Image: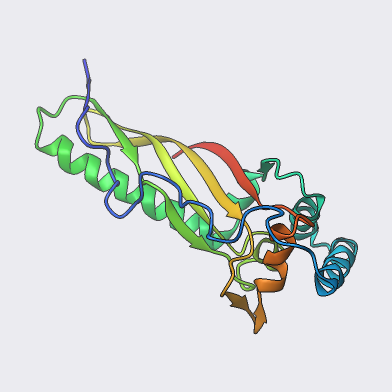
Length: 208
């Protein structure tokens, strides 16, 4: 019979136990709206239809959700995210690390079949225009976490079952910018109640 290793999960070094908290923008509707906030809102409302015409449906959906000002959680298709080569490579790198660590523990044990829990912790992933223009506009960056089990057979072969989770506090951080465009005017939409920040999440399951 095999056994389950209940010590520290594989692959946890370098990952965070909790996802990053929201940024330090002012609270929702804390500030009074000014004329230029309404101009910013008008510009933002024109973007989702344009992006949809350009095939940037994920970016259009995320911005439209922000402008809806509900603050409701927003789900993304984690399977689509895993299809991005750059993110897939990051995930595969974590799975390879799990296998290596599992084999190291297994070889120091009795050599019978064994199962090892694994957890990458939360890790950052930056979406760039080269990764995907659509996901870059939709998320810009996010955190992902892998949890699962590595099973080692008597002959030393490995199999991994895992859950991939993605998380993001969707907002515009004051003081930051992209391509020379400052985020402060867009952050003010949340701070004045014209839009609202929200949490993005998604999950997918796999076997390797």
